[in-house]
Structure formats: C-alpha cells, structure tokens
Image (cartoon, rainbow, N blue to C red; front, side):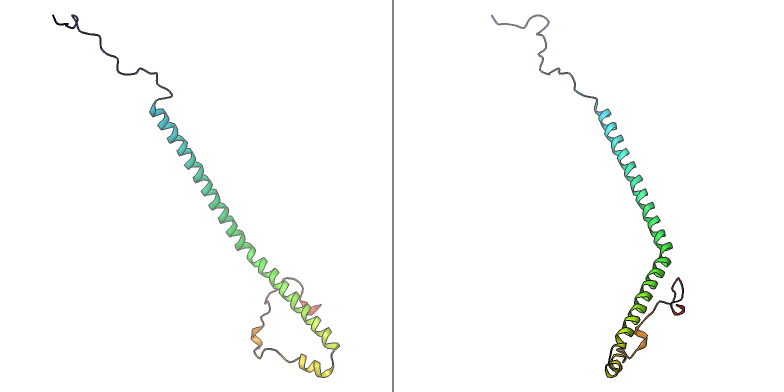
Length: 128
C-alpha cells in the first residue's frame, strides 16, 4: 500500500519570510532627498548671486575711487620729489665748488625720463 496525500492536499509551505517593513516607502525617501538636494541648489544659487553682486559693487567702488587714489599717489610722488630736491640742496651747500659742479651734472641726457604728476590736489607747492 502506498501513502497518498490527504484529501484536499497538503497545506502550502511557507517559504517566504513575513517581516514587517522598516522605514518609509521608497517614494517618500526619493522625494525627501530630491527636495533636500533642490533646496541645496537653491541656496547655492543664492550664494552665487550674492557673490556676483558683491564683486560688481567692489568693481564699481574701484572705478569711483580710482581718481582719488591716483591723486593721492601723485601727491605722494610730488612730496617725495620736493623733499629729495630740498635734501639735494642741503648737500650741495656743504660741497666744494668742484664737487658741486660734478654733482649738478645731469645723470640722464634725456629729460623726458622723469615724469612728474600733472594734477595734484591741494595747494601748489611752488606757492609755499
């Protein structure tokens, strides 16, 4: 005699594990991460726009301050030039006539090598 299955068949074999799912559904994670990345790019764009605006302000400040800075530089060059002239005059007074004649000879034949500032803000140094 042979064993036969029971009438109606055997109960189904449970081969799959029925574990409770952990965390949220995948779509919730997807949209959460997408929103976070989108917010990060938004803030990045805001920062780039702000940096561009600051660079533009810096450039315009340079444009508007350039004449003042050039005038200040010219005043400084003129002040140093006239101070050097006064020092040369003081040194010449203490020299012998032969040394003074050699001292007064120009170093350069071309007078165009020396450039003085054309415009100086403030009183004329010749009037003082």
